[in-house]
Length: 220
Ligand code: GDP
Ligand code: ADP
Ligand code: 5GP
Image: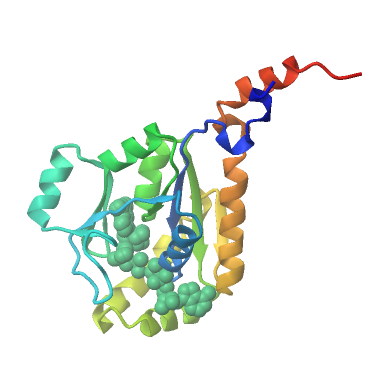
């Protein structure tokens, strides 16, 4: 029987929707980037946004930067899986890439706010695994936003003012990571992904695997 010896990794699995949120500056983009580098099978959902591009950002890779008019067109034609207004700008998740990835059983990472996380949770509860990243202190959050040096003082101020109300949503997430030491935080996120991929309810192919396994006669 060769079928029973198929490696476990070949077992069909539902795609995982890994949602990561945090107040601005807590480190979710840094953690997401590291995850993508460590695991090339993981797809990143590239959001559309009406905010200005930051100097370090690449259009089409970090975001699709679009006008408010174009955003409204996408939203009204149901091309967005979820959308929200965050810090005075519109953000949304394009529907098609997600549907393709899920149909193919590929995992996808979403860097979205709590309003978006809630919408995905309502629509696709079985596939969503959510992580909220907290800063170790509010002072450290503030210094990270300044150290990143990508936003104006005014933008940083808005983000800091909004951070408290965002943090209040921490209870709506499956996992909480305090990003004090980056390596430790990243290691924790990797453990979450690893464990969630092993969940029985996501591994449809297990039925066949176990059936074949039990067909094998013991050599007594
Ligand atoms: P950051 O908070 O410093 O990473 O700043 P960004 O400008 O990249 O993101 C602003 C907010 O929009 C964050 O709370 C993101 O989680 C959220 N966001 C980004 N993309 C999406 C999206 O597609 N949908 C939703 N709902 N929120 C998003
Ligand atoms: P977010 O995407 O949540 O807004 P970023 O990933 O852009 O946050 O991180 C904000 C800043 O803090 C960046 O300059 C990043 O390099 C830095 N940073 C992230 N995690 C840590 C950490 N554990 N310790 C120190 N600095 C960090
Ligand atoms: P930033 O402007 O710093 O890139 O993102 C600000 C916030 O918007 C972050 O909390 C980020 O997670 C969130 N965000 C980015 N894209 C989306 C999106 O498509 N949908 C939602 N709901 N939030 C998003």
